[in-house]
Length: 565
Ligand code: GLN
Image (cartoon, rainbow, N blue to C red; front, top):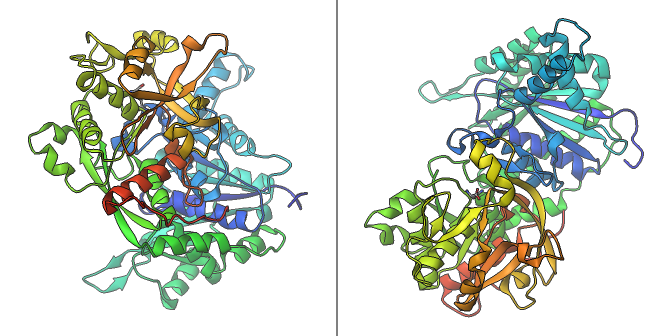
């Protein structure tokens, strides 16, 4: 809509029965459908936990920390939103109980409640509603708010109550609630069970929310009688009971699954949106590529948290996106960096076509990462380093090419005789004072690509500068730059905070001249890749990895020009 027809519409997405049902993906898929109908959509995650943001949370518990352009450290679902919708999120897209309470308590200390008793209702719920409304803008047609956790969680109650109030105030016809529930299949009985979903809807109704749609996550398709039962007992129109059975190949099939059940029309009708055709052409084409890879390529992901599927979510997604662009399927071999410190390290790396070291913090497994990088450098296996993966690459180079024994980052060894990686000036006070939350160098910064002939400039398509997102405290120590350059390391990307003082520039990208593909960046390019617009660095890396696999000079000539979506 150029001029919105009526007020901003709201969609609230809640979850029931169990977590890990893919609520974020379902939310993002609904967003994509609305975008493909030509609506302007904003999307947000309301997380009931008390952390002010997920920045300080352990990836092993909570998965990766996603970073927006404006420097918010957020839940990984924002990554799904950006990848599916193709539009950047901002600080407004992430709200936690911690943030809400922090604001309310600060207000109370500042006397802003005029001596009133400060309570969950109305003060906390008002603050939540304010954050929902914060996404309103004249050109925004639909705001989607996903509520973290499952209905019945104690900490989620103020959010549910806020949703109930919001619907009441904004007009029910313009707000809808979508409930995602799990419908288990009991193998021994050979039956699909609706009771857990019924109970979770009952819990919602206790709060005063009647869902308009029921998204049913299930391993097996539901069938008419199960849907009838769910509609009757959950008080939802039969057409609005949507089957979200496991997709066979890729999460990017979920919008298609919803479309096959007429989600576009159902949503438009429910929210009184103008009827629009949902153009799925480009999306279908992309999924078609994913489903028909012509070959595979093996990428080793060397990290600290390999057991947690979501710990490197954006990285694995970006590898996949780049693989699709080459009509390939990536086989990602997750290697625990600590285990590469044992004697069989070489065996673990056998047969991989590319090695990637992602971002990370702390000492554990760091030496294993250095080993993998050395192996890539010496054997010509393509290497891509991200953030800590860049810092580690310079340390490996210092130790094994420049002969600087015990070279290290002061993050890993405060007493290193060769501090190749050191705290950024602005970070020193935070490190010394131990202030961790929200204090890193965060968000988008411009990286200048000064060398036209560098591989970085080439993979980025010949541009002079790029914008990438960051999340770090340490940087390459410029005192060592000349020594590295003399030995063949190329600094092909830099951040220049002050044009008058180029010596203050910060190393952003490094590469090796005499290597098929050895590139590393201080940034997190994985936060800017999407299935329809794979990131150039990942594309270059996957292309080189496939070239290595084929052992020929042709490399991957099959890269498809994916249509912009
Ligand atoms: N620990 C390193 C730093 O803080 C790298 C951070 C990262 O990889 N995100 O600079």
